[in-house]
Length: 258
Image (cartoon, rainbow, N blue to C red):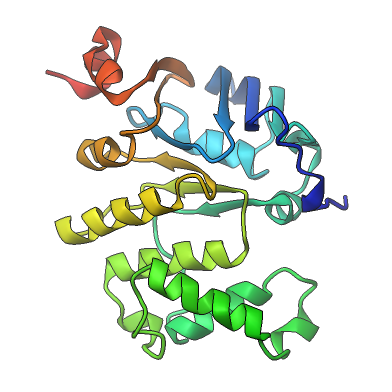
């Protein structure tokens, strides 16, 4: 299936719409009539206990898992259920998994260069020279991800946090409309976590971002201007500002505790 990103329809301000999504595995409902939407430019945090369905939801959005029932739309134009993982990525959805997957034997610059050339039907572009526009974009992203001055360093020598930032930079090279981040600060130092919060706050408004995270301090830092969605048993348990969610008795009972 051929998909053109320029067809993205954000007229009504919604970039992602999940409607009544159910995913069943051998009778177990990993998602159970899940409905939510993400606005253009929004940074939405998704929290909830293990097994709540957070990863399965991301798998549905990126085409890795097909829903048993329900609908998923990207930009009100693309029906994700009818698209391959490649088509979904090409349409403008980028995903970063919890563990960083950078090319450790290549430099920071080369990682960003490879990301700029990925998935363009592939071989001719791998050997093409970067345009001045691409070089400018790499320089801009290096500053954004706090790795300017580190461009000639092997990615394998970076700290865990720096590898996470590099992978976010590699996603940004693909110019996604929607970015999915799975526990981006897991294993980071306090200083790295704080810098990651700064990075995501800088990206807010320029990209739509969904962040799945367990670190409540980090969530509070990046959710100040937006909403938090709480998943439980495959459905939305609660949604609202961080203070509203933290005060919700249902959320306290199943996730936050006292």
